[in-house]
Image 1 (cartoon, rainbow, N blue to C red):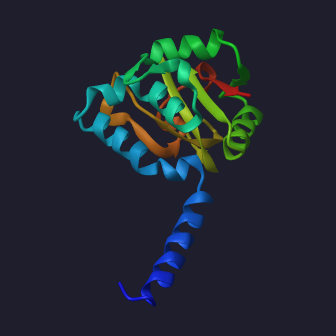
Image 2 (image 1 turned 90 degrees about the horizontal axis):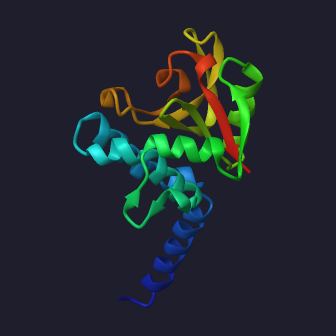
Image 3 (image 1 turned 30 degrees about the vertical axis):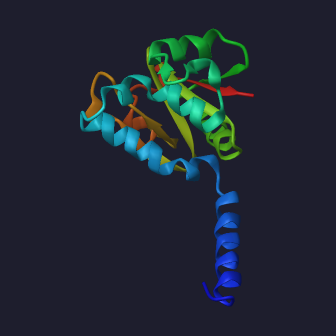
Length: 175
């Protein structure tokens, strides 16, 4: 390699590393998240549907008590750990606009925020909120799989795409 090319390559690598270092955990994992949702929605990977909440919380936020190596707990167990486990705080229901706004702000701040109804768990994503006619509120972005209807799994869509009734959805944050 030419002596002139070495400094140029070093500069490019440094610039690329700097850009990567400034990315959020969501940006660094966007491809993985998308692959999980597609794998579930298209029926390519049933484990992607069943274990998505635990894998995502482990990968994005280092919440390791939901996975041991490749073995992760299912969504009902994730919901139980969030509801009854230490470190999680209930924000309120999806029928309260202030709760939805707070959840979106906390997600933008880098905290793990989840929405739960029964055994379905979705992660609230950082980003702008969107008006939902069905919920008659502004809702945060979400990512989640639907074990009961894999094709309805979503990535970077409003929380209302995963849950029909906002009054039955409870949001939690890990602080």
